[in-house]
Amino acid sequence: MNKKLMALILAVVIFLVSCSGNAPSTTIDVTMTDFQFTPNAFTVPAGKEITLNVLNNGAVVHNFVIMKLGTSAGEAFDDADEANVFWEERDIPAGGDLSVTFTAPTEAGEYQVVCRTQGHIASGMFGTLTVVAAE
Picture (cartoon, rainbow, N blue to C red):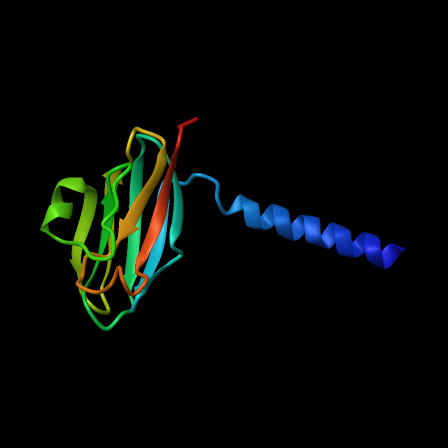
């Protein structure tokens, strides 16, 4: 009986720890590789200044593009997507790193994050920025 209880407690603890990773933060730390963002999901408070820390461990240039709420770049970023960009940091060189700030959207919701380098979205280099009401 004690082993079952301990297993249950451990499962609950693991669940709670995994859920806490979605708490809103004013800092985004992301590593870019070919072809993914790690992590690929971010939660930020609406309207707050956000610090983005990027490390490009990939072999080519990458970008961090936040699309406007309700829009998607689809399978490939093209000229038509330019009007749907909320914010972006472009041309982060292979092996490069940077730290920049931007103001999070004021409207809560899920925003698509993509790398606009040709072929990267189709290869899986996209994620989600979840904006929640600021406390």
